[in-house]
Length: 316
Figure 1 (tube, helix red, strand yellow):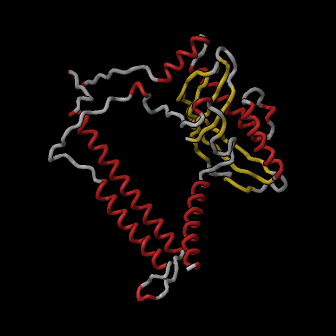
Figure 2 (spheres, rainbow, N blue to C red; figure 1 turned 60 degrees about the vertical axis):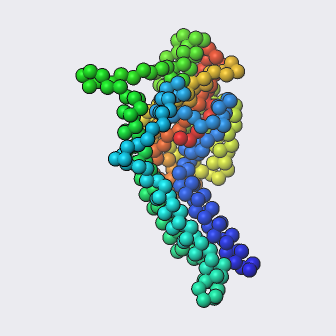
Figure 3 (cartoon, rainbow, N blue to C red; figure 1 turned 60 degrees about the horizontal axis):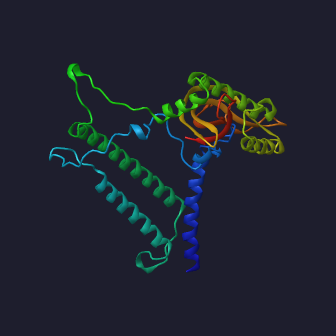
């Protein structure tokens, strides 16, 4: 019985290892290491808002309940979810029973092999993708049909449509910033974000934060320095080349405790690889395959016309 318990724990460990490996595939060595850290004030434990999603004041009211017509397409998620759950449950149950020795004929099973684990993971992923696609297609179809029934879209003469919009949270936050700093300009701020991005990445590659004075909060400077010390100890350098910032867009603006906070979504790509100091050999990354990424960079300053400093990096 002890041997069978070991088999079950081995299977669980294999699944955890595959999950961790998949997550590590997305990690890179650029400044920050492709991870989230730093402080966003009271919003440190909340996910940064996407600039493409409406703020709370722009969310449309929930539609009234209605009964779909007999000709309207119905969501297909329930049956597919049941089918997927049945298939996965049957396969997993069969494998576990064989692994625990309850095979056919009363004999001891052969255990759970690596092939069975990979097969189960592959089938589960395919079923997940299939069910997800069906649910998205069904939701989109239902939204298109229900929009007109609930009066969310009002056709006007000449084929045009009118919408009543309210100021977003970003607009409201920028208005508050301008109250204490009338010279603040969103375009100039985005330009300064790009400048700070390049300077910080350059300081990171040179393993010397003194080339980016005043651009980091004390917490961010400490974290970056710890990473740089590790590179120096391992005698490695993280090389960043062909950096191109595709877009910078403000996603959140707020004030608290006498501080301004602005979070900007940065979309960029670059060559990101690490080399050995002694031999110059590439130990991680690629010198030819560019890395594309989107990160939220949060900047803070005392309220008023004061310099901005990077206080947090969050992954999208």
